Each structure stands twice: as C-alpha cells, then as structure tokens.
Image (cartoon, rainbow, N blue to C red; front, side):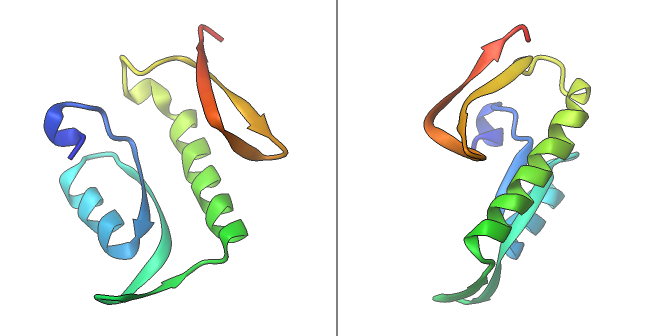
Length: 95
C-alpha cells in the first residue's frame, strides 16, 4: 500500500507469499521470509531469535546498498539496546 502512494518501500518482512508478491511488484526490494504460509489460518514461523536475525541481515544488506535509492534519509539508527530496537528508535541525520 505504501508504494501505491509513492512512499519508498525497500524492505518487506513476513510470510513467503507476501515477500514473493513484493518482489514481483517492487523492483529491487529486499525481503526477509520469517513465516511460511501453510493455510488460511496456519503458518510455520521461525523462532523469534532467528526471525530477528534474518530481518537484521536483510536490513544490513539494504543499508550497504542505500546509494541506489537517492532521497532516502542518510543517517544512523539510534535507540538500539542490547541488540534490540527500542520502541521509539529514530534516525539521526547526517552521520
């Protein structure tokens, strides 16, 4: 939905179906599949620690290539504690 309104979407995390759909619709999108769709009301989910690691790895790959998306905020994420993002993390510009 965000891409429809012109908001740059660069990372999608979720089930294999959502990530596959995003890859078809958004060129250059990064994805992290953390859940496998099994049925309408069922899914196989990764352990939360592994899911967080996959999301972090995808975000790091994305940030390594951020020059491909001019106009994105350049900066660093602050608010991380003990390897986890705080609820009110933010980006400090110009670093």
